[in-house]
Amino acid sequence: MKKLILIVGPNGVGKTTTAKILLQKLSKCAYVDADWCRAINPFPFTDATKYAVTRNIYSLFKNYLLCEDIEYVIFPYGFHGERKQIFEQVISSLREDSIPFEVCPIILKCCKEENIRRAINDGRDMERIERGIKNTFHFYDEYAYPNIDSTYLQPEKVAEKIIEILNIKLTGNEG
Image 1 (tube, rainbow, N blue to C red):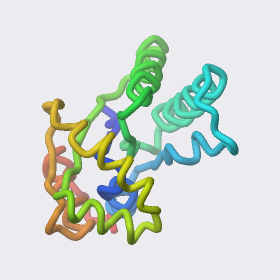
Image 2: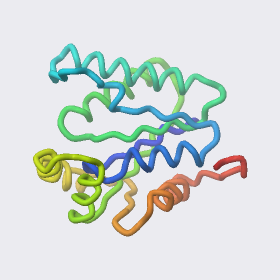
Image 3: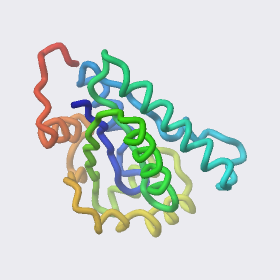
């Protein structure tokens, strides 16, 4: 069955970096960038924009999941705020369309100091970093998904751990 690899975690933890490495490591793989699904300027979080973002994510997932050449869809995403509701609506719509797939969630974590360092390296300003720490750092503690503490790991190793957790057998054609 096709796998939707959902990588969640606090802002700045390395979700996107890890997802891009996974894309290179896995064959028959697609990557959905949540940032591009909501690239609106300005971005008022209204019912209209939430609907548009939901439909964008749904359409990309559906197209990739129905493609016979794709086995894995990677989606780095933050569940904070109303984003989890958007994700749940997308999943519900895909299930209503009888599209077979398995959601495989993984939480990435790191210590607060490392999270701040990564966010700074990512070019985020201190106001955004502080807001991210306040709103997302402990948000994922309540979820029982498999998790990886990436504090002392390079992104390549985090991707390898995800492959191991999901029991994905590499064929030798992967990067």
